[in-house]
Length: 364
Image (cartoon, rainbow, N blue to C red; front, side):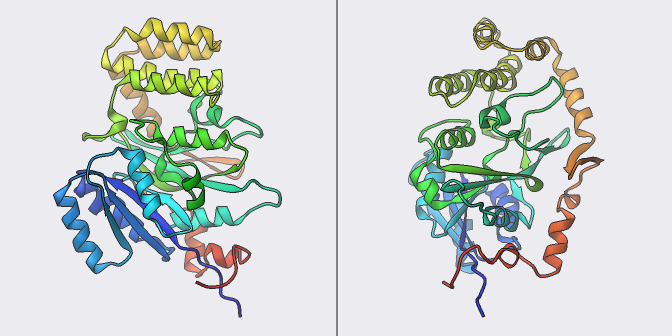
């Protein structure tokens, strides 16, 4: 009898001076996965005595935990690259220290990458659905799956209509092979947009296919009152990044306009820096922004902050999940986020490798 192949998965968690979030949120959710053949590589990005001690104590009790201590703060990209170098698994799943996974996360990813089609590209990247949890409420992502031949940059950065949100995702939703990450590491020294930068660069090659899912397996916490890169309003960093992407033909004009609105203009408006206004207007004209994008741009600069907060709360009151061809509006709570199909599969004792025995042969 052939034993189903169960590949080792390495979970890479970069962290720095946030032991409370690491030890109570991200790390327990990684160790609590239904898929058990894993290791958790926690990269402490610089001197951090409290986190180092907590991890050393935990690693002595749980051999799945493998701490990596960097001598100085390198930033998220380099910390993730260090975690990949130290990993022993065939597959890599990233998890930020302030996010968490639902227990079926790794099973869902493994099922996705097991469904390889003949003639498909060399590497597969699985991106799961996520729940954006903010003080104003929860929003499910993505709203839709990519259209055929839709550029990845357009899918994650641009809107198709005024009311439709972008289909962006974050690092904690990404799952891929270690081989891919060794060949195409994160860009060293990049202060922000590290996940988008990586996926846009690998999408520009002819070697990578993406598997997107709307089934929620990750919770991304955004807007909490704490130190967080995504809370920074440094619009000039974001502007410099999108300009480089456009020069390297990693994004289209449509994607660039979408990013200028959702990130650069938004950061500049919230920081009260109106010096960005003429710069952005010139860039949007050059990129042939569509009428609804100009309307969105004007709304960003003219809508009072309190009104924008109210609109976000109103939108977050109900989360729209696409199930088949039917949209179901539900009030989302954490216990509701595990898809019924996955929960039933787990209760029946099935795993992705049971459903797809062709996902490798032999035993370790």
